Image (cartoon, rainbow, N blue to C red; front, side):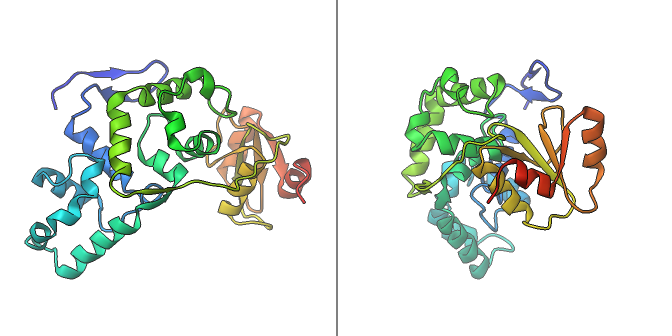
Length: 261
């Protein structure tokens, strides 16, 4: 877009400082509709690019206004009535969304799925995040200074608050966890990675187990990893964990460690 770019301290990537930059807007839209966010089928990258150029999509709220453009969509090449109806139905169905997915969909810098879950578990409903202070966020296991500052800055921006309110006014039903029960344990606030094939659970079941015991599941091994749990036929994560001095446990050792019953 011709704007200046900048690089945050200790980060590899360079960023554009223009929030209206077409590449940033389209990237945010692609993230918003992705599987782990609103999970809207029929809005792939090419279609988002096309709809952006046509002026149909300029922000998140526009996704839920596409139903008002049905006649225009039907006139587009490769958009038959069935595909348009499927797209609009997918958008309508996406309005019932879990709280953490809603937070994740916003694309807050440094807030991945696991951090979104931490926010959802500690700040409910979403209005509790409006003008949240970094000091409050730092009280949550798993949220460090850089992430806390980023979240506080996002929710301290009136434009972002207006965006969230506009989204909610589109009929979005945020599903809050009413019976989320976190057990305080030896892994509370610790980052846990699994590698290999598990005997007692699927990958998602392992993630849920770690979350229930207060831990933070992760897919990759880094210097911030606290424990690597090893199943059958472990991959390269095991060697990396050894080189970094990460604590390594078998599946059974881990279950005994957290006193799993």
